Image (cartoon, rainbow, N blue to C red; front, side, top):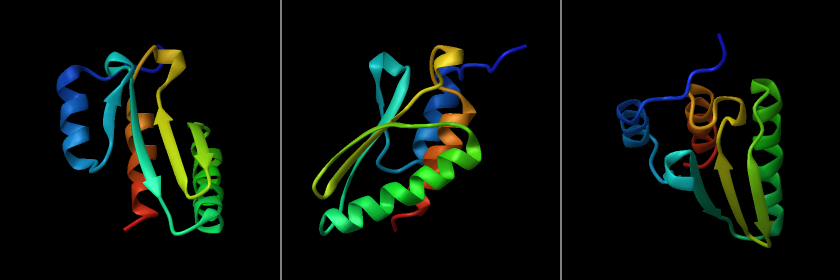
Length: 97
């Protein structure tokens, strides 16, 4: 059995706990925007996220412009959101307090 997509209720419960993350792609992904003092801080954050993503074997779609980083998470194999996305979002959020 493959990775299971979360139900709408499960997504809502996770998002309540994940401050700053919002649904995107018609509920098939979550995204969050981060802003830092400068490029160096943004790049350091991206490096820490990259290490988390490698550990989880679950990689974000992201972009960076100077001090801004935008991250979007989805599980392509499941066709939408899974616990993998939510767990990684939680770890990413813990990097910025």
